[in-house]
Structures are given as C-alpha cells and as structure tokens.
Image (cartoon, rainbow, N blue to C red; front, side, top):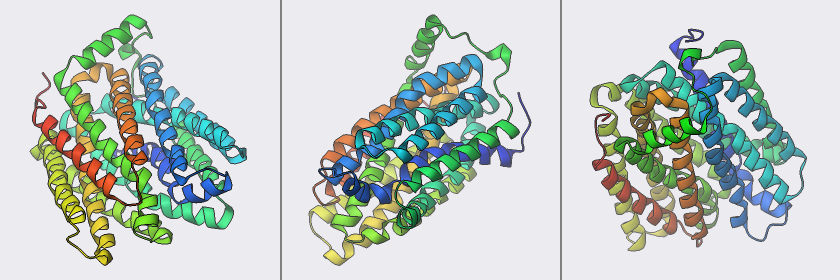
Length: 399
C-alpha cells in the first residue's frame, strides 16, 4: 500500500495538499479591490472572476485527474497537477492583462484539482467507513487553518510587495507540497487494483456512481453546501467593505471566523465514529438553516440598530462556516463509501459535479450583490432549506 507514514504525518500531508486550494482562493481575497484598480476593471464585481474561474478549473480538472489516477496511480497525478499549479502561478506573476490572469487562474485550478480528487482517493485507498470520515475530519481540522491565515498573509504581501507577490507565495507552497509528496509518500494504489483508462470503464464508473442513491444525494447536498461557502468567500470582501465599512479589518475578521470553524472538525473527529456521518451532517445543516432564517428575519425586518449589523453578521458567519466545515467532510465520506473500488473516478465525478454546481450558484449569488449582505444571506438560507430536505432522504447504509 505504500510507505507507512504515521497517521499524524499522513493527515498533515493530506491537509496541506487540500490547503493549496484555500491558498489559491483565500489569499487573493484582500487583493481583489486593488487588482480591479490596477488592471482597470469596470467594477469590482468583475474581480470576483479571479476566484470563480480558479474554482471552475478545479471542478473541470477533477473530471480528468480522478480517472487517470485510477490508471497510473495517485502520486504521479498529484505531482503533475501540483507542477501545473506552480507553472500557472509563475505565469500569473508576470502577466499584466486581466484575460491572461484569468487564464492563468483557470490553469491553476486545473492543476490543483489533483489534490481534491487524487488526494481524496488516496485517503479512500487506506481507510473506509467512519474511519475514513475521521481521517478527513482531522485533515480538515488542519486545513481550516489555511483560510484563516491566508487572507492575513495575502494582505501583508499585497501591502509590502504588491498583489503579484501573492502568486509567488502560491509558487512556494506548491514547491513545498511537491517535495513533501515526492520524498515522504509512496503510492497507495497497488498495481493489481488499477483500472485501464478505457471509455467503457469510464462509462461503467459513471453508471455505478450515478445509480447509487446515497452517492447522488450526498453529492447534491455537498454541492449546495459548497455553493453557500463559495458564495460567502466571493462576496465577503465586498460585504465587509461596502456594507459594514471595515475593509481594512476584513482579513482579521475572516481569520477569527475561520479559526472558529476549525472547532467543528475537532468536534466531528471526536463524534463521527459514535454518531455517524449522516446524523452529524444533518444536524449541522439543520442548525445552519434555522439560524440563517433567524438572522435573515432580523435584517429584513430591521429589528436591530445599524451598529449591531457587524457583530450579528460575524456571528452568522461563524455559524455558517462552522456548520459547513462539519458537514462537507461527512458528505464526502458518505458519497465515497459505496464506490471505494473506483475511488479515483468516483472522487472526480463527485468532486467535479459538486464544484461545478456550487460555482454556478456562487456566480449567480455574487451577481445579485447590491451593496448589502442580504442577497448572500437569502441565498444561503434557501440553499440550507433545500440541503436539509434532501439529506433527510439520504440512505444511511451503502445500498
């Protein structure tokens, strides 16, 4: 099965691989405004494309990286994807054209899709069931530190060296991941379990994945949850700047919110083997739904004075990210458990489907931004209601 890393190091490696996605998104958040000015964009809303195009590449890339990892192994796909991420980061450093920057961001996303699909498959190669959910939760617990620290680091780099230095940091992070992976982690998919890269195998894999009720529902619910998360990430800088008038403090607030959400992974890792993935994900989504309805009512009915808008929005943000962090790992584990025999292909289908749906949702909600946080809160509330209803129909066994 490959080199027997300690559980601690393996979780840390997987968490760092996953963190490259957060580094590629959250570190950019404080720079969107200055990039829109520097590249003469018509509105700051256009700068949101820097985030959404990256995530679009991540979603599409998983359609390729997952199946290939089932054929050639996880490690070679991970190394190739990270290399592509590094090269695209260098291209972003030297470009001065917005379109070329978007192309570089899209290629970054394609490359970083490998940790999402092949990395998840690597975990599934070694673990299953509630143990799988626990390992993912432990990795997510570390992973959450990336979006907590990334905006602060991005703001520091932007102020000190300009926004292009953020892509230099992406390059360095990619190099660290590449060296760590090459030196310490051997292949987890043994040759006997590899599948030829054939169209017939791909079609059979798609059929197997999309005819399993648990996989379908878990993927759709995950897509809706991530849709709310990506909408928040894309809209939060403008909300803190234009609605709450605390632009300079946004990275600090975001750091605190992200660190609070990390507590959910500690709680989940402790409880998941006792209570199960379905129960915890349903409770998390349900709590988010109820709390979002309350907060939405408070804002729409103007039940609080303006000076309380900021603390109430931060409180809602903490609950939102806390419950999302608890539910996403469990939903991924629920979706992956029935299809472990095609883990690479399945993770790519599940990951790309959920990512592409969630990106579409994020773009639509982002376009509704009107200078307040109400479109975001409304969108997240609707998504939570649908997610909760769907997950109630999610089978608790793998049949």
